[in-house]
Length: 473
Image 1 (cartoon, rainbow, N blue to C red):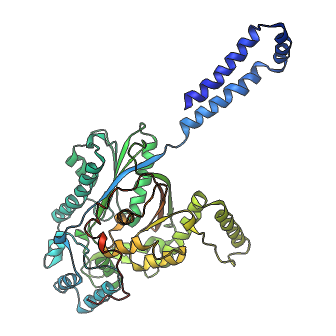
Image 2 (image 1 turned 180 degrees about the horizontal axis):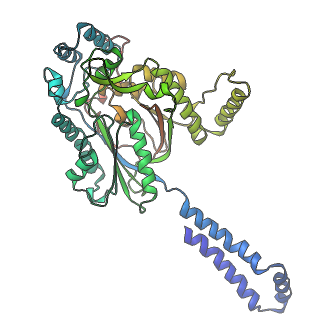
Image 3 (image 1 turned 120 degrees about the vertical axis):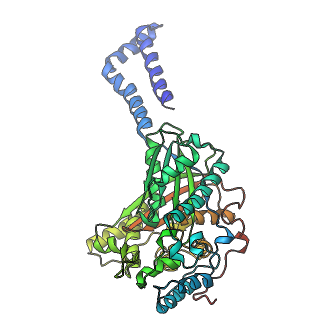
C-alpha cells in the first residue's frame, strides 16, 4: 500500500515534467508557459512529494493490528471436583481452624454462587490439606494446568512451538525459580531468542495486562510474529489455615484454572481482532493499595486479606476505567452525553449525578471477571446490564469458581459454546485485581467457533442454571 501511495504521485510528477520539457503542440505552449510561471519547483515538491512522504511515514509508524488466533482453557477433571461437603470436611481436619471459622466458611459457600463441580488441585484432596501443599505439589499443579492448556492451543491452531516469538505468563502468588516461562520453554523446547516475561503479583486482572504487554511487544517484532500468553493462578501453596475472617474468603472462592491465548500481527486464521486495552491503576491511594493484601495473621499464617471496602474501591476503579475507554468505543451520541455530564460534574463540584454510558450500544458480549457474586452484582447494577449479559460470568463462577485472571476466557468460551457469537460482534473483557486495578480489553469477532468444544464441552447443555441466593446442600 505504501509503495502505491509513493508511486502514483511520482508518476504524476514525471508526466508534468515531460510535458513541461517536451511540448508537442504550439497551442499547448502558451498554457505550459503559464504553468511554468505558476508552478515553481518548491510548489511541485510540496504538492506531490510531501503528501506521499507523509502517507508513507503514517503507514510505517501507525500501530499494527493485533489478532487473537485462538485460545484454550484448562479442562477440569472429575477427579479434582470438590463438592461443598468435601471442602468442609477437609476444613474440619485442619487443627488450627476453629469450629466458628468452619461455620463461617459454610455460610460463605452457601452464598458464593459456586456450584458443586468446581475443582481444586490434587494436593487439596488429601487430609490434612496443608501438609501436602508443598513446592513439589505446586509445580505439579502448574504442569497439569498450564501444559494442558498450551497443548490444546497448539493442537487447535496447528502452530509449532518453534513459531512462537514472544511468551508472556502471569501468575500472582506462586513465583518459583526457574520461572513459569522457563518451565514452558523447557517443556516445548522454544527458541533461545524468544522474548519471555513472567508477571507476578498483578492480581486477577493480570491476563489483560499480559495481553497489553504482548500487543506492545508485537509492535516491534517482525510482521506476522506470534505471542503466546498464559494466564493462571496456582492454588496449591495458598491454603490459609488461620481464623481471620477477611482471609478465609479466598479459600472458599478460588479454584484451579488457566488459559492460553495466541496473538499475532497476521490476520491469517485469526478469530478475533484486539481493538483496545485500557489499564487503570488506583494504587496511589493507600486504601486501594491495601484492599487486597497478602500478609501474615497474628499467628504467622499467610493469606490474602480482602478489605471490607473492596467493592467501593472496585467501583471507583471501574469509573476511572470507564472514563478512559468510553471515548474509544462508544457511539457519538453516548460520548456527547458522557462528556456533558462530566463537564457538569466538574463545574458544579460533583453535585451532578455521574452519567453511566450505555455500553450495550458498544458491545454485544460482556466478560466480567468472576471474582464473586458481589462483584458481578455490582457491575450489573453499575452498567445497567441484563441478566443475559452477565450470564457468562455467573455461569463461569458456578461451574469453575473464581479462576483468577483466566476467568474472562472461560466466560468467552461460554458465549461461544452457547452459539451466541457472530462475526462482527464486539466483546468487552473487564478484570479487577490487587493494587488496585481495573483493566479492559475490547475485541471484535472475525470468525466464531465452529462448535462447543472447550472447557464447557461436557456441561454446556446443562447451563444456564438457577442460582439461589442461599444454596442448601
